[in-house]
Length: 113
Image (tube, rainbow, N blue to C red):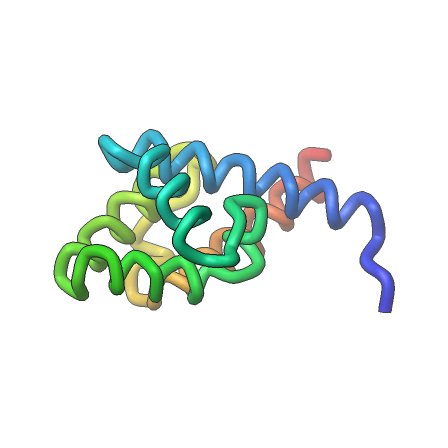
């Protein structure tokens, strides 16, 4: 099944916002992204499609406790940027949060776009 261009553009834009949230939410976000790109086969453009891989790599890099804190900061920053209530997604894993936030973002984009 082929993805429609408008849906791809929406995912690409969401991924760009997610990358901004990583960079803004973490004091060293750009460094983390660059390190993960060098260390793994994942590119920053794929985070929205592979949030579980991103979360796993954060955990390998920082350990479970610190990765959980960083993921929360990223999710809070992303929610703030998109004006989505953090409490709506806070009970999920990082991967499920990203997917849930994307669904809300996509539905808002259809309404406002």
